[in-house]
Image 1 (cartoon, rainbow, N blue to C red):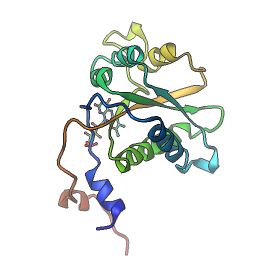
Image 2: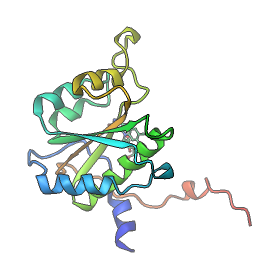
Image 3: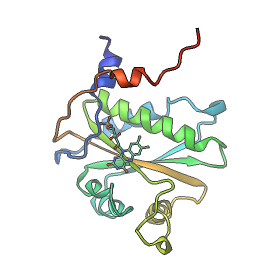
Image 4: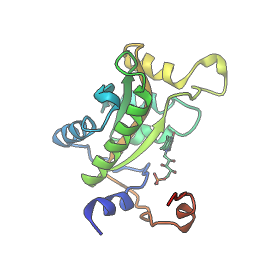
Length: 177
Ligand SMILES: Cc1cc2nc3c(=O)[nH]c(=O)nc-3n(C[C@H](O)[C@H](O)[C@H](O)COP(=O)(O)O)c2cc1C
């Protein structure tokens, strides 16, 4: 199996990390990789925030009623944003960027997990607004920088079985011959 297919198999969402920080050079490598992602009409609308501040990670972990709690113990996270003035397809561009980021992290033998922000409520009470508004308020980023997700990254403290191709997935394909 070639190295890329092996990487795809190995990448699993991991929510437990060791205390070891992600080095500055590695963070730079991940940033560079993320911006190599394809984008609609080459609009390159993705923007990133790099968070290593422990207090901020703790606050980000409460962005949603569930699904983000583990972020408080992650060594770092990237917030993946799209400048909506740069591309109508900012959301699609962001999703590709976040995926490339996760694969790049795996290639650096780091673990990662996507935490969704866009379209999710901050709490169970709609009056408390959206997770996106909460995260933007914490970061102070411009309103035009729409937030798709956060990707937590770190050295893995848990291992998960690699993916294997599934027969049920092969049945999801329609062939026109
Ligand atoms: C669009 C999207 C949203 C996700 N949101 C969350 C999330 O909010 N919290 C979380 O812990 N995992 C989240 N995940 C991770 C998924 O739970 C995970 O990818 C899925 O269970 C498959 O497992 P795998 O990544 O190990 O293949 C998200 C993944 C995607 C692609």
